[in-house]
Every structure is written in C-alpha cells, then in structure tokens.
Image 1 (cartoon, rainbow, N blue to C red):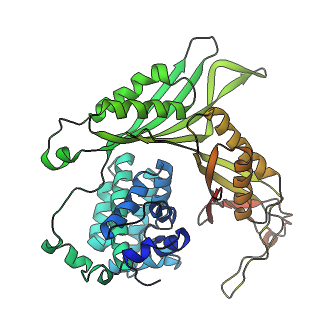
Image 2 (cartoon, rainbow, N blue to C red; image 1 turned 90 degrees about the vertical axis):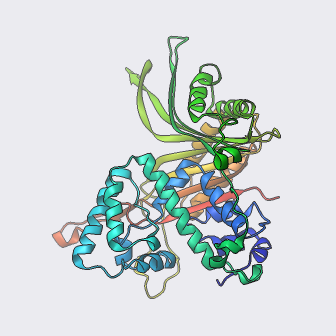
Amino acid sequence: MGTITVREANRLDREDFVRAFGSVYERSPWVAERAWRERPFEGTEDLRGALWRAVQEAPREWQLDLIRAHPDLAGKAAVAGELTPESEREQSSAGLDRLSPEEYERFRDVNAAYREKFGFPMIVYVREHTKNSILAQAEARLANTREGEVKTALEEIQKIAASRLEGLIDYEGEGGMTEAASKGVTRGEIVLGQNNYGKSEIRLFKVKRDTDRHEIWDLDIRVALEGDFEAAYIEGDNAGLLATDTMRNTVYALARDDLTGSIEDFGLALIDHFLEAGPTVSGAWVEITQFLWNRIEVDGHPHEHSFIRGRGERKARVSGDESGSRRVEAGIGDVYVLKTTNSGWEGFLRERFTTLPETNDRILATIVTSNWVYNTTDADFDRLWNGVLDQTLKTFTDHYSPSAQNTLYRTGEAVLERFPEIEKIWYSLPNVHHIAYDLERFGIENDNEIFHATQDPYGQIEGWVERRG
C-alpha cells in the first residue's frame, strides 16, 4: 500500500485502517485496531500519539507479546528469510545482513544470553546504530533488570514505529511539509503530548484468616494516572502530583477492606480512590494480574491453609475518568491446553513453496491468552471469569477442529452466547507444534505416537469475536 494522508486515514473503516497501519508495530495489528477508535486525527502527531497510547494502555501481557513479536537481530528468522519487509529493511540499514562468520557468532551468542535472562528478544532501533554499537549495547543491557528492559524495549519499539509511520504518511497532503522539515524550527511551538505516570510491579499477597479455611490473593498491580501534569513535566513543579510511593501504599492499605472478592471490584475501588485523591487527576487505569493457587489435596480433601501454585493467570484492567465513566476488562493468560486427536489441517492453499502435508488427525496444542470487555460494572466478576475459562476449555474439547482459526471463533461465539455481560472477546492461540518423529530410518514404526514438541517458529492465530451493532 502506498502513502496516505491523515485526512484519508480518518475516512477508512477499521479493516482498511488496520491494513494501512497494521505493520507499524511488528506483527501486532491490534495496535492499529485500538488506535482506529480515536478518529478523527488532527494530523500525523495525533495519529502517532493514538498508536502509542494503544500500546501504553494495553495489558502488560499484550505489551510483552509485542516485544516478543520482534525478531532477534541477525537471528534465525533473518537467515531463513522470514523477516517482515520492515524488519528486513531496518536490519539491512545497520549492515546486519552482511555479517562475517565471526560477527554472526557474536550476535547469536548475545541473542541467546539476552533471551535466556529476559525471556524476549533484545529490541534496538538499529537506524541509530552500527553493528559494533549494537553489540556493545547488548552486552551492557544484560546487566539490567527485567522491568528495566521491558521499559527500554517499549521505548525502542516506539522509535521503530515512528520511523515506519513516517514512511506511510503523505505529508504533501498535509500542506506540503515533509516529516524532516516538520522537525525543524518551522514546526512551531513544542508542547507536551499524551502522558501518564504511576507505579508498576506492586506485588501484593493477602491472606484472609477470619475462618479456619484461609483464602489467598497473589497479585501484581500496575497503577497509571492521567491528568493536568504539565507543570510537573515542563516546570518541575510537583505540587499537584501524587507520589508513586503513595500509590503503592494506597494499594496495600485499601487491600485490607476492599480486596475481599474479585480483582475487578478491587480495581474499581482503586480507580474511585485515585480520582478523588489526586487534585490534578482526570483519569486512571489499573492492571491486575492474579497468579492462581490451588489447594493441596490430602487424602482426597482440599487442605484449609496449604496451596500449590497452578499454571495460568487471571487478568483485569479497570479504567475510569472524572466524568464517572468506568470500563472493566478481564482476561486469561498462560493456559496451556492440548488434545491428542479430533483436529486437522487440510484443504489449505498450496503453491510452489508449500511443503506441509495435509492431515485430519493431529495434536492441537496452544497456550491460551484472552481478553474481553464487559458492558457493565455491576456484575459477579468471579462467576463470569470462571465461566469464561470453563467455556473456553469446554469448547476446546467439544468439536473437530479443522483449524485453530475455527476453534477461536467457536470459542468466542460460545462465550458471548452464554454471557450477555460480555461485549466482545479476543483470543491469541499460538500453535505449539507436535511433529511426528521420523523413526522409520531406524526401522521402527511410529503410529502417530512419538512426537517432537517445538514452539519455534510457531503459527500465531488471533482475533476478536464481538456483537454486531
């Protein structure tokens, strides 16, 4: 697709807007989809800000997925020719497609060390670097904390996205000013753009001890505030700001009386408090991840105060503003599911690079991530979350799956039919491939019993299922 003016972008429907700007953030079209809701845009800066806000306000797991969507620098994807056109151009600009064998080995080693420590690829805006400066930065960043590297990765991604967006916008259509010229003194007044601040990685653990049967909540919480903070940013005047340390203390203090049930209700209580407590606060949002624990069973009975950490995460995002508007989202993370049959992949498009054989009997395995939006703030959120998880698992089992895409839609449809309180639901279903291992070369028959399990590379199936109108 060629360049487009912002005026033309404002007239695009959601599908065409995502088609136009979905590549700005690597393999993450959901960013453009969220930004589309903020139309109309006054200009390029407004569009860029909407895209960046979509990332900043996304659940932390989505942000991590965005980071993981990027390839390693001079990694396997580059060697195999599997980079997106944007990443290929960017890596080429730093000479990463012209490495000596020794340089390639150094990149391979530092990529492996970085992934092992942080769990995602190192992100660098390569147009600001050479091969040697990238390697030097990589070695220095290995000493950082994970949270620091998440922050750095998102900052580098924003630079990458800004550069990609510049290549998509027709600035002549905005009055003849190119992006390069717009960065000069002719641009006019420099002002503070969208901003928020808050406290991340608040680790809260609560034990309810008022009966012999204890209840626990194991939470990771992020708080962010928006409002009239210009004096603090521009003039260094902090008079109207809540300290982020105060935000942390507030979470722990309110947890005693307000964390008695669902994390969504606790999030609503936090939003109400911060909107009232901050004189310059006009909006707030809270992201909560609940780590799940199961009771240890002893002689077939759940123990009253002993637990074992389960796999899977419960997510919530609650936001609100001074007008009284409130929005509640919830989600599922890291739920690993697998069925050994009743799944296939056949009838797909074949062309000259297709090598995959068709099958009507394969293992279907995936790690479910989901996010959904409620159309109410007055609901039994515990019941609904458990119901969505139950329906997700039930639908996974109850049909022959011709594709992960079809299973995604069936699951979302079943959830929306069962729960009218949910407006729309998003799923991410990466393929965890289980490939039949070749034993014939050893003279051993493999009757679809022995598999090699691999996650790299993997198919990524994502989508929203929503109510029309």
